Length: 408
Image (cartoon, rainbow, N blue to C red; front, side, top):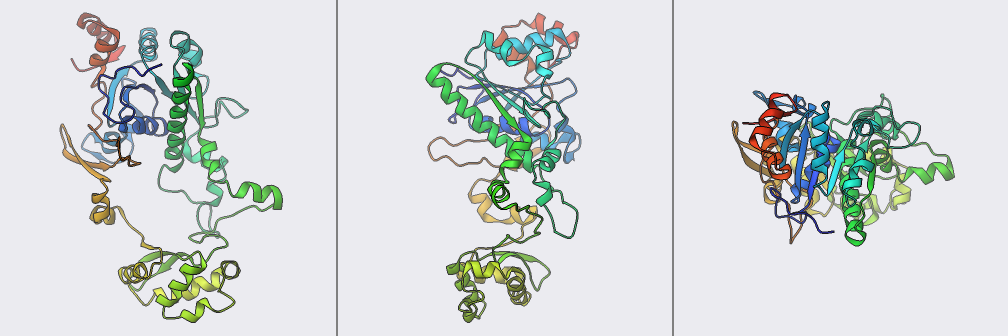
């Protein structure tokens, strides 16, 4: 089955594929944002009040800056799924799409008559990506789940932070973004299968499983040795030196001298080449038995220099090192600009707005940001005209009855 022509997609490798997004907040919209960045035409369905993500993060006046980036490259359609006609419109739209991405609690689409069985009856090649807290099956399937609760169940929260304090929160939507990548990868695999067979399928992406996948090295260690890993703060277990080290100007640097060759270069840069010959520290396994002791020695050296001095000296010596960047440091760093990771785009009311660039970089068919996210319902009428051939009178009636929200 060939992808359908896309009216508003980009020119990347997914140009020609049409994706219907039935998602809110982060994991689902982040998944479709990835697809949109690489050329897919993504039609996002929002309720009349808008996606809750528009209330998250910082605002410039009434404009959600988070919304500008996670809704970028998408066509924004507002349909009230609480109405029969609204659900009927979505069924019609799904019949003309290659992929549907949803992140309702399991069972919700079934109650609305929008489950995969009903949609695939009209569109056998349809791929449905289902993102939820705990998956579509199993005893926890119907539990409500956000990334933070699923990090707890997935074992990640237990390992985050310092050992003498309660489990810490990572101040980013790590599990949501991680799940989004898995979900997008699943969609791509399902589309490859469809190209060979013409058959669609369901991709079941669970937040807790995406979190749990980061526990990969600890699964066999517990099964075989009964080891329960705990919080280690800034250190890398059984490896030294690999930690945060204080500097003379009150900052921190991260030094990662994991293997023996790098440790020898670090010792020479510290003016203590004999350290790497000391049998207590000469091998990676020997250093693993003296992590705290060795970290203290490295810390004594870093305290005598500024973060910038340490970074310059160790990079010259071929030792992996980095200052701890703030967002202000990122904006000042030329590497981000050179790699197109800070993109400035126009907005209808705010002027130019900078958003994060596209990941990953493709040499022949790169992705791109064509436009920022706009107002609720900005594309409702255009999409329904193009895909469902609705007339202006029909659109006016639907809008007057509150089934859709659009710009007249």
